[in-house]
Structures are given as C-alpha cells and as structure tokens.
Length: 115
Ligand SMILES: [Zn+2]
Image (cartoon, rainbow, N blue to C red):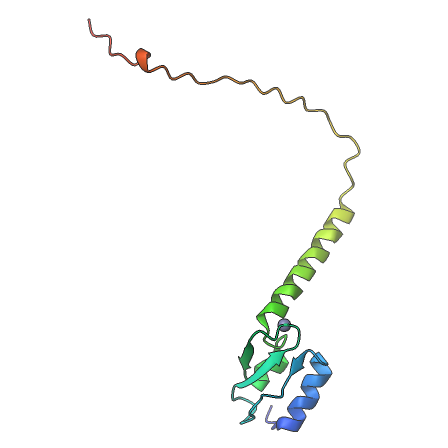
C-alpha cells in the first residue's frame, strides 16, 4: 500500500504492462498520484492526462485503445456465439405473402350522414 513509486519504478512497471504502447517523453513527474501527460503511440492524436497510479491500474487511459479493446472482445464474443449456434440446417420457406391491403382512406367517406 504505502509503496512509494517514483518515476523510475513507474516507467519500469508501465513498460512491463504496456510495452511500447505509451510514450512518457512529455511526462512531468510530480508524484504517483499527480496527473501526468502521456501519449498513446497508436493514437498520438492527443495527450492522455492521467495519474501514474491510474495508468497502471487501468488499460492505460487511451480511450481509443479502450474502445478497440471493447470491440475486439465483443467480436470474440460474437464469434464464439455464432460458433456455438448451429448453422441453420433448414431454412423453412416462409412464403411471405405480402397481403397488400392498402388501407384506403377515402376522404369522401368521412361524411357525416345526418338525416
Ligand atoms: Zn490508443
């Protein structure tokens, strides 16, 4: 808990966790719990403002990576489900009788027949 993590330790852990996914060149270290600016090498469009603590606890803080990760896992999920699901052996011919009963709304019929 009270393990004080300095910049070197942080960089070491971050490299272990993320490899070369993030760059820490522009990082101005203050403390483990003070936000720093890092950058995702896959999405260098904007800096990521995150505390070193959060960076190590989460997927790093890149929203784009997070989304990509979500999509990937979602696709895995879908692939697994479609694999489990037996491919439709019999496609029952549902002759779709499109009974085109057009609801004729005749304006002339809407006359109030008052005798
Ligand atoms: Zn990213």
